[in-house]
Image 1 (cartoon, rainbow, N blue to C red):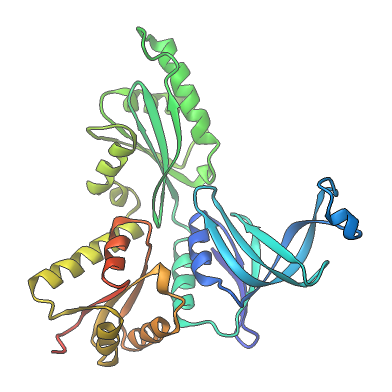
Image 2 (image 1 turned 60 degrees about the vertical axis):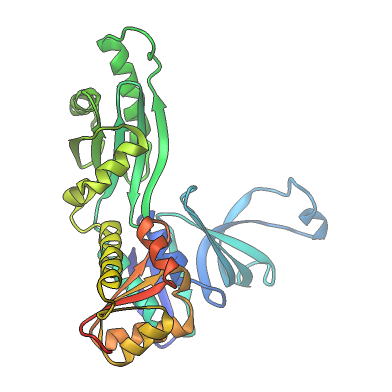
Length: 347
C-alpha cells in the first residue's frame, strides 16, 4: 500500500492498493460512516424505465464519492467491495459498490483516524516492498498452487498431469510442466514473486530445471525444498518447518502464531505476566505494563479496544492486529479476542 497524501485537518487520506494483502488492511480500516471516493464503473440511466431494463447500457468510468454502509472482503475472489450511498457524482442518493483490487486508488475520509487505523496503515506501508510468495506443491501426478498472504495460505489452483496412469516419458512430463508454468504465469504479482517448489520425489527438481530453461518472467527467484507430501498437506508441512520464514524473513503469520503460543504458555505456567479479556488487558494497559498487545481483527473497530491500543502505544508497547484467518487468530478469539504479554506482573 502507498499513502499518496494525508490531510490531518480534513481527515482525508489518499492511498493506492498495491497487493492482495492490502485488501485485508483496507477491510479493517474502512467502516460504516466513512466517506470513500474513487474512479469506478457505473451504468448511466436516463430515466426510471431504463432502470428496470436488464440491457440498460455499458458501464462507464466515473468518479464517485459514497457514504459507506458496508464493506465486504471476498478473499477467494481477490476483491474488496465497499457499498454505500452516492454523495458525489452522478445519481446522488443512489446505492453504489466500489470494487477494490490491486492498482485502485482511493480517497478515504474519516471523522477521526483512531490508533488502530494508524497501526494498520503503518504496517501495510512497511510491507509493500515485500515480494509475493507462491507455493507450488507437486509430485508427478498433480501440482497445487497457493499464495502465502499475511492472513494465511490460500489455494488458488490445481493442475493434474494429463498423462497420469501410463508410462511417462520426458515429453509427457514437459507437457505437464508447461501447464503448471502457464498457470503460475497467469497469477497476480508474479513479476515480483518468490516461488517455492516443494513436494516429495523428483518432480519439483525437474520442474525447477524446466523453469530455468523456459520460465522467463516467472518470479524474481525460485527455491526448492523437500516435503513428505504434495498438495496443501505439503504446504502446511513446509510452513510448520519454517520454510516460508526462511524465504521471506519477517512473516506476519509466523510471528502472530508464535506470539499467541507464547501467550498460551504463559497462561499455562502461571499467568502472572500475561492478561486476556478486555477488562484484564485494559487494567494492565492503565498500569503501563503491556509489552505486546494482541487484538483480533474482528474487534478492532470497537471504541473501547481503540482506547486500550492508545494506552499501550503511550506506554511504548507493541500492538499486533491478529488475523482471524489462521490458527493463532482462532485461539486468540477463544480468549476474548484481546490479550497481552506484560513487562511485569501487576498482581
